[in-house]
Amino acid sequence: MIWKSGLRVIDWGVPGRTSRRAPRVAEYRLARLPNHQILERGFTIIELMVVMSLIIILSAMALVQYRQSIIRSREAVLKDDLFKMRDAIDQYYADKNQYPATIEALATDGYLRAIPKDPFTESTSSWQPVAAQPDPQRPTAEPGVYDVKSGSDGTSLDGSPYADW
Image 1 (tube, rainbow, N blue to C red):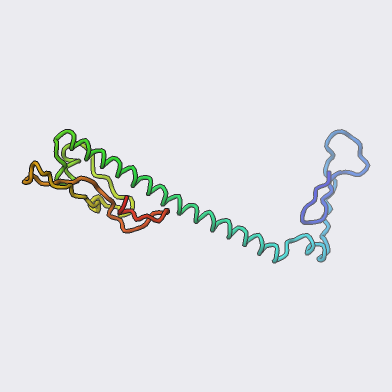
Image 2: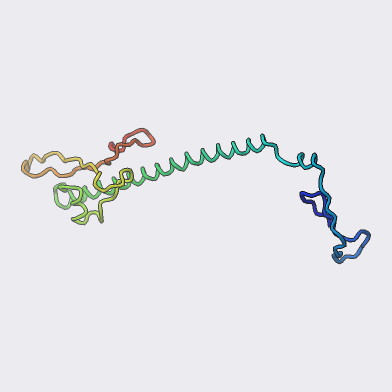
């Protein structure tokens, strides 16, 4: 059997033997390649630089996609939180015929388990309540919270501010 390696050839076996059994190793012959043949078999520095630059470009593109996917997931969480809180405000109004005085009243009265964190500010106290219009039939009643908005001052991937959602 002949095996090629960084060295030229390793030939192990007995020449002239025709048995089907694996031949015994008679000798190992290792021959070094001449220096000019070793240099021809390797990579040049330009080839290595081209491969490295392609790897860097592809990893930079992957990093941008990763960061955008994190932002997209936070935006999805924000939309879901706003939907749930607005739905809880509507249910509160349908049950009690008035809007909650604060956002925390939704949690204390059992309409939400807890006030969710704003995914961009990482705080439960940064939500911006929108006050309801005063009721003309009950002018002394407190208007309450009609809507809720994010307290973040950032802008989304589509260019709209999170505070306008």
